[in-house]
Length: 60
View 1 (cartoon, rainbow, N blue to C red):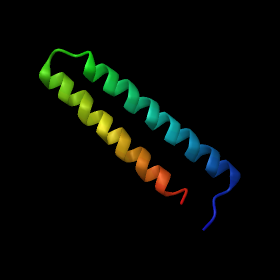
View 2: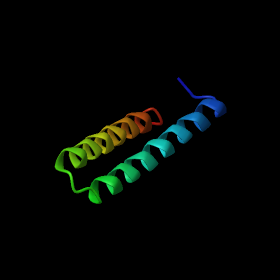
View 3: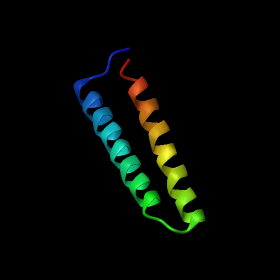
View 4: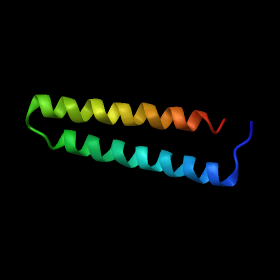
């Protein structure tokens, strides 16, 4: 199965968005003092990373 140009553009946009979210969430976690909130940000960053990796797998 091959992707259309539009599908490829959307996939790249989604990958980029998940990468940006991961970076922001990690940044928030690093600047957070509350352990529970820090953990929440870290878990969300991990989820964004996993989603990004899953999207990247569609390019292979």
